[in-house]
Amino acid sequence: MANHFIAHAEIPSTNFDRAKKFYNDVFGWEFKDFGNGYLLHNTQKGTTIGLRKVEKISVGDTTIFHILVEDIDATLDLVRASEGKVEREKTVIPVYGWYALVNDPDGNTVGLFQTH
Image (cartoon, rainbow, N blue to C red; front, side, top):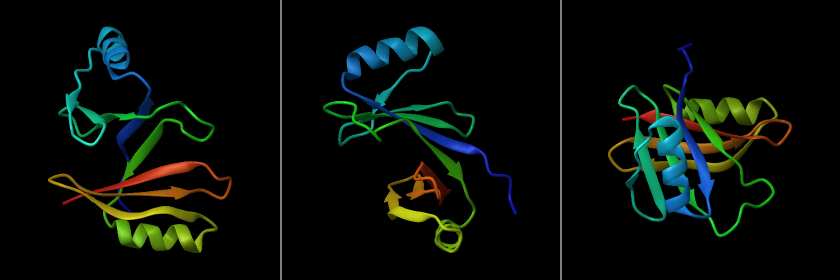
């Protein structure tokens, strides 16, 4: 099995300007518009950070990390066979690859990411 590294973290934000300033001031991250209420910072080291626009932070609307997998379809099958649930099926991210969201047996949301 391949090494599974965190490929992407997604942070909900009610105010992009405030969030962009905070993450730039604290970590030096520079976000660019990625469309559809989403901003993206690319570390150029295999990890990206996304800011997702939300009206308010709700229960269950938390930061999600995405684990890099070699075969997202096979991983979804393993999730289903291991008492997990698929929250969002394999979804294309133009130019980058695919992602999916799964829940572990305790209901925690974990993202999966596969490059092209």
